[in-house]
Structures are given as C-alpha cells and as structure tokens.
Length: 397
Image 1 (spheres, rainbow, N blue to C red):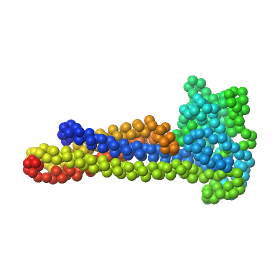
Image 2: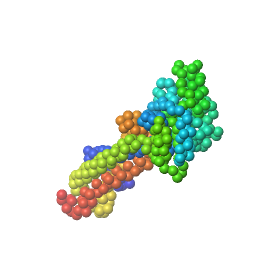
Image 3: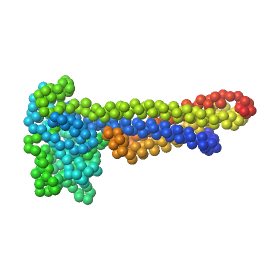
Image 4: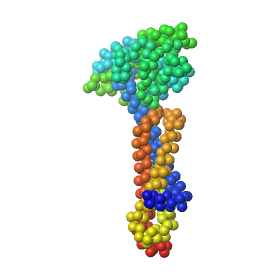
C-alpha cells in the first residue's frame, strides 16, 4: 500500500508526463481492441452464415450467383426462378446425397415486422430439408406448421399489432435464430405450404399480390456423400444442367474473405508501428522522469531503501498508468465499434457480428495485458539503469 501511495503521489507531481503515458497506453489498447473486434467480428459473421446454410452446394439459375451472395450477406431480397424439375435432375447426379429446394420471396417495402425496411423470405420444403431441420428438432417439437415461421435475430412481432403480418396473412413467430451479423438475421423461414397460403390470400389482404410462378423454385441446397468431393459434384451438376450455376459453399464470400485477410495484414502492420512508437515514447518519458528525480532516488537509497524498493516504486507508476490508460482505451474503442457498426459494415462491405460479453471481456483483458507488458518493458530500461547507480552520485547530480 505504501508503494501505491508513493507512486500515486509521484504521478500527481508530474501530471504532464503522466498524461502522455496514459494517452500512449489508451492508444495501444484501443487500437488492439478495435482492430481485433472488426476482424474477428467479420470473420465470425461469415463463419456463422456458412454454418447456418448447412449445405455443400447451392444451385441457382445461371447468372444469379452474385445476387444470392448479396442476399445472404446483406439481406437484400433476391428473386430468381427455375423449373422445379431440376430438383430431381440434381438428385440423379452421382455423389448427391440429398437435395432440398427453396423459394426466395420478400416482404413489402416498409414492413413493420423487423428493424429493416425489407425482409428476405425463404420458403423451404419440410419433407426434404436438412439445413433448418436440426435446429427445429432441437428447439421446436414437430417443426413448423402452416402459418408458423422462425426468423433471424432482427425479426420480431410488432407490439402495436400483436401479430406478424406478411402480405396481410398473420404468422406466428415460433422462434428466433442466433445472430450471424449477415442478411440471414433479417430473414424469415417458413414452409412451402405457408408461402402458397400467403400468395393465395395476398390478393384479398395485401395492397400488392405476392406472385409465385407455378412449379418453380429459387434454389436447391445440396448435400454430397461423405466420401464425395463437393467440387467434383458441382462440376457434374454444371455439366448435366447447363442452365444452372452450382455454388460450393466453401467458396462463398471469397471476396469478403480476401478483404478480411488484407485488413488483417494492414492492422498487424499498423499495430506494430503503434506499439513501437508507444514504447519508444514511454521510454523517453520515463528517462526524463527518472533523470529529474535522481536526487530523490539517491536520498531514498541513502536512507536505507533497498534497490528493489526503488525499482518497484518506479515500475508501479508505469503499471498504474498502463492499467488506467488501457482500461480507458478499451472502453472507448469497444463503445465506438458498437455504436458505429452500420458504418463499419457499409465501409468494409462485409457483415459484422459484435461479440458477447465473455469474448469481449477476454479480448479486453488480453489487450490490457499486452499494454501493461509493453509499458513496463519500455519504462524498465531507464528505471533499472538509474536504480543501479550509486546513491552518492545520484544525490550530487
């Protein structure tokens, strides 16, 4: 406790230098947290989106691969159609274990059922589905019935209406899927029967009719056999069905992945530069501080204070500044990233998922430890040198 009081007293006596070290610590910690949050958030978002798809290959009408990526990534509804006969054709391809069709629709613009102006609607075939089914079996006994739906994390039942209306048809929201940070968060899933019911009733209940072309699907999700190569199966599908485009899910969002990798390299380089500059400035500041306090250090040594006590006192000052500045930098960086998430998504062109409390706390502690080690190492250079000096020489200087 005496060492802490002495350190605080010394810091108060040289407030300008203390603020400089505090600022360096905050800058280093804030940069570590902000850079890691953005990169990890984008990577986690893409990874969760691929896991949610749960398929090895997605087959869409030829020329619609980019539209599907945009729909899955940013939640911009995509409308595409192909004959439902392709489902049986795909099942007949060697290496295909399961194939399940989906229909892509969208709400009317300005829907009140979610925090986005237009929502991506995905109808699935419950008899053949293998992507949503595991979640439904775990969370909803019996799956989805007619006029029931599950939604992404941004889908909710409006309080003022008390009902989830899609083209005038009331749906019951049976569950909410885990957030992914992608367009899947603003998507709603229901069965083919529910989609046809909404389309049929829309002519009487909605201001605009929901039109689903007969005997068509928007995409087909494909799962390959355990010993099969998805790439070879995709090539076989493309060869047999020239009017479709098979997309391997392992290759989805490739442009976004490359962008994240490039961002990671830039962040690592900037972090290294910031770290070196921060440590260099801290070393200079503490060199000036101990230079001006040589006489005080000499008096302490002459009065019987051990060298280790002097060393601990000075390192305590560095540690207190590092911890205080690091906490401040972490808090400001985390708050800024949280508040400006939409801007980050727009600027980067990739989705972003803010982590939960425990991962965020772990990241903060890691950043604080890095800052503490860096500041202590930088401060130790001049501190150790002056603590080894003879007390008589220090007092004369």
